[in-house]
Amino acid sequence: MLRATLLLAALAAPPALAQGAPLVAEGCLGCHGPRGAGATGVPTLAGRDKAELVALMAAFRANERPATIMNRIVRGYSDAELAAAAEHFAAQR
Image (cartoon, rainbow, N blue to C red; front, side):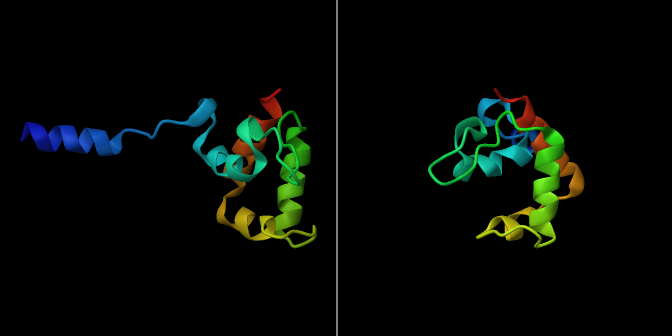
């Protein structure tokens, strides 16, 4: 019984997040670099205005902004998740 309880507790524990980023922002780091600081050919997210980031993601979602993959990625997130990611990256310096 104790083993089952410990197993359930381990499964319920949230995963460790890199650099204190909210889980929703973690998916961005692979392309946009550590802390969203940008990578070769990929724009910087860190330090950009939250409203600007939300507007950019909305434009990708609506196919109003040219994209290779962002228009598909952004559709997998809710408005609240996109706002949380934008808030996180806006706070990065």
